[in-house]
Length: 199
Figure 1 (cartoon, rainbow, N blue to C red):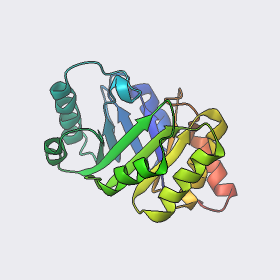
Figure 2: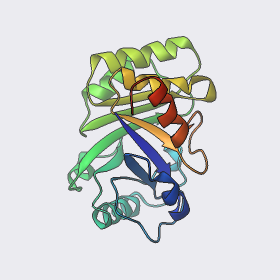
Figure 3: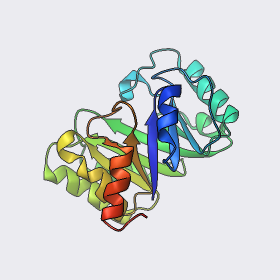
Figure 4: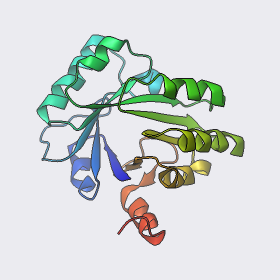
């Protein structure tokens, strides 16, 4: 299990030193000087909760450029992209599904995971009930290399407990929150230490 700090600019990069991985959100800000590190490169579309609202080819090209520039460990590509994009990167891939309105039924989530083309599949959906959490738990128990949790302040605990169920990454924030229910990097590290999961 690795702590991921999501950053939106060069200033936040300085706050992410304790993270195991740093997610560069290219849609949220500018990155001028990037120190050495382990990176996930992402440029999130508006439809997936980001700010990018341009041409798709340019978005993919921007990610490819930064992935090569920082020698990224991972890139994050949305589940609805054509197969050809998944072959354009020389690093591991997180295939992701974000839903800021609801958590779909288990069958839908299961189909997403079973048809994955990346090395990992990430599910981040809005939580409305404990039944939504049960769907996520079932996914995590039945499949490997899946990152899954519920968004929303009420369900921020699912980000931590997903690690107990096999989720390889916990997404945190430094500076400002990037998604509802995100936990601050240092707070997440402290919680995991208290739970005996991390030193």
